[in-house]
Image: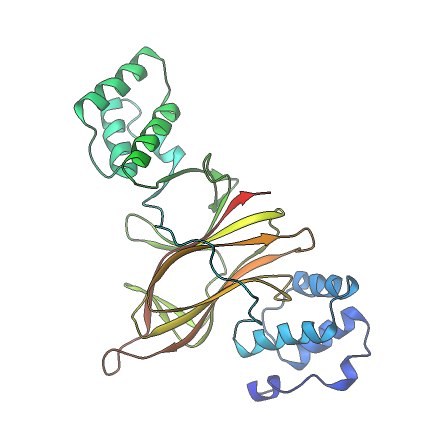
Length: 307
């Protein structure tokens, strides 16, 4: 089946099918790869809750065409400076376990971006030696110093066995989808990058269409913030969208022309069984003849805000 077939209207004989049969028939008709049993289940449950079958078809058709679903009304709620650093608490605490001076230097470098001043080093080292504070307490105090210098580090601990699920005292819960570490390595949530992407030294080499989709999981109901720090040439255009229930519910969508750094918020409801964030490469006007379409995502993550 060609992609042109996928772009036609919904066959009339599908509308009379029961919910699950309709979803399976629509997936087969559109020749959609990568649709999981969980996707089929959440779309079926959505129909049972009253979602019109035409909306299910529209969401599946958008996926087949590699384009964002219908854009909801809304704009980012905040333009923010991205986090200066994300540091794992276990790594900080465990650094140089026999030498508090080296530990303090390392923690300051990671969180404040400088060496500690003499009075800072002496005060913190005295509390460590006297047992008045442990290393986790010291890290919390260094973070406060960083805030006072207009830096925004996040100290997080690993959640379970997934290195991309982080929990911090300040931001409660954070899910990393795409992130460039301080050592320059680019990490991506498992299964998020599509075949339209090639990982290269400078970032990601893109082809038009869906380039990232993840992490397809349940999020607790409440307000979530989508953090984006996306570096790309001025002629590059991508759309970043958050959807629920296999694309049936649009939670957030914004098209970026050129580089951008922002945070946008959206609300997850109890009926949003599965939430995912997708990135669509729209178009690229090269600055030079034959120049590759390369982007450098520094951060694409979700963090919990409030109930």
